[in-house]
Image 1 (cartoon, rainbow, N blue to C red):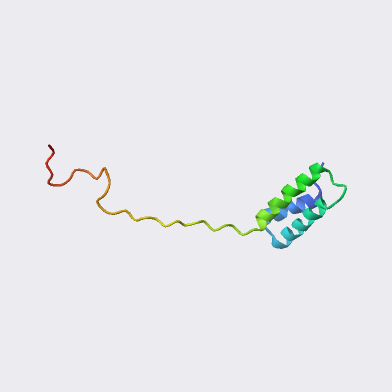
Image 2 (spheres, rainbow, N blue to C red):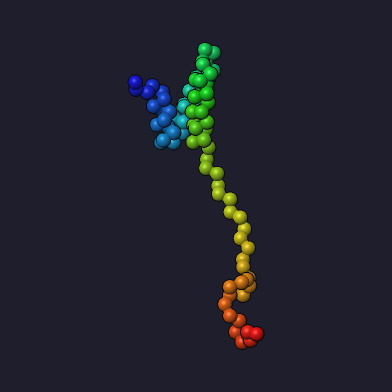
Length: 88
């Protein structure tokens, strides 16, 4: 059985990230959830699709850049033998 044209349209909107189509998809998902005769399984499905649409519509979160401490020169283990030192 082929998928409904609305579901295909929503999937294409998510894939292509078309803002107009995503807005329509969000409206359609909310409309399907507002139907009084909707079964619980249908509500769960359309809530999931709505979450996908909202996630696609949201701008990507900027990656946090934490400050990096600069290492001091000549510190730490494994620097090799110390010049001019006696090993006793």
